[in-house]
Image (cartoon, rainbow, N blue to C red; front, side):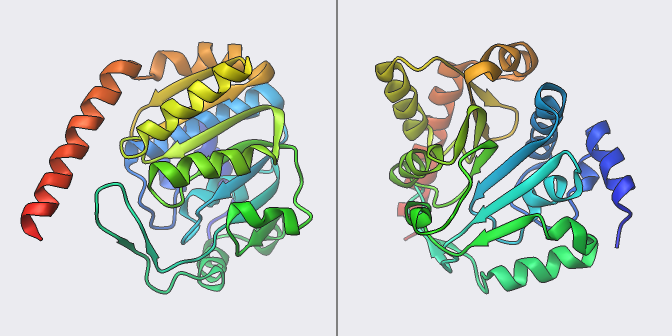
Length: 246
């Protein structure tokens, strides 16, 4: 088990070695996740975190170890197969909350885990539970389809604070959903700042966090149009290769 103070020091330093559990995030993703976490620590102090699609809990570790994160909601229906925009299924064998918690307990003290609640359900079914509606940071990393990503945002938004940041993983696959979300927010008259961030992460800042996020995260971001154009081309090539191999 790693010392909690050591993990906190790594978080503050942006040291990606804090991610002690295997995940599908790249090193660039991990650096971006820590940058967003430290941004929120600077802006709001204590914060709460909600995540859709936890699998083994790799992206939960920095928040579990951070005393500034006071509450965590982990939402995962726990399927073993998920659809994917690339035209092939993603397989998650042995996908269970028990497995995730057992893995987290090896590296984190029990008091870190007690601030987390798990929900083995689809985000659309959270209404059946007493889920807090003031999360400051959200992460969507469930089914990697445009339909699911858009739906997960609509559901997750109900449990976010007015001033918040929502992240999406695999933005290179669900970019059309992200563009649709931006269209929805503009149609509502909701002011926001959005970023395609280093790695394959995308973030939306809402409320009072919009302007400071522009200042802190904007310089890190890819050009919107260039990122989407490249991602669309790469996705089409992946789909073509998959069809040829089938």
